[in-house]
Amino acid sequence: MKSNLVYCGDCIEIIIKNIDEKSIDLVFADPPYNLSGNGLRWEGNKTGGNWYMVNEEWDKMTNCEYLQFTEKWITACQYVLKDHGSIYISCTYHNIAEIMVVLKQLNFKINNIITWQKINAMPNMTKRVFTHSSEFIVWAVKGRKWIFNYAELKNINPEKQKDGSLKQMRDVWSLPLVQGNERLKNEDGKSLHPTQKPEEMLKRIIIASSNKNDIILDPFLGSGTTAVVAKKLGRNWLGIEKNIKYAKAAQKRINQNL
Image (cartoon, rainbow, N blue to C red):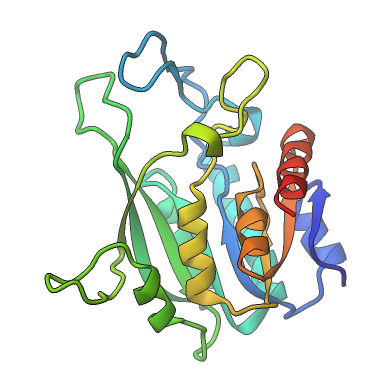
């Protein structure tokens, strides 16, 4: 099995056909949240620029289809994950239920639900609910002897004790939405990928649950963040992306970070 490759296609089919059983040390997955369809937008926003809610065909399923899809891709990841391996799944309150149910059915042990507090979250448009400023990352493990690099996480934790000493990393991460030079953009200046995740987020996950030369799988590679950060940290990686536009952009970004 080769590593450090971007596959373009359906993640379930590619995992089954191309990745060896129990060969992956860590999975990070940012699957569709199944939120598209309403076409919400906010043009002329003065605080963060124009804003467009995700409205992609790959993010539109019925509730039944979405549950079946979730079960299939997590089962495929379980097959290739080593017995001590970890899986981190990005989600919101919209789809965390399906993810938790499937993980429990497959006998994963859920260690943490990390809250990503988005410090530059968009204001609420409807004025009928609290402003949505958080997402979640479910961390689950296969087996008992999982990797957790506790000391390394303390070293990179930006939070410190009152006396300036190192502090345990907690399960609430205050990170901004991707912006500036880190954000991939189209020629028209709009964001290339609607759900690009911060490199700092992947840095924490990869340091926490893998060691150098381990293999990390991202079945929904998107803009390529997982692969870029894995390379920087001396890990091997495999990325799968169904959308050819995103796959090409991810590969270009990876090449630029050689």
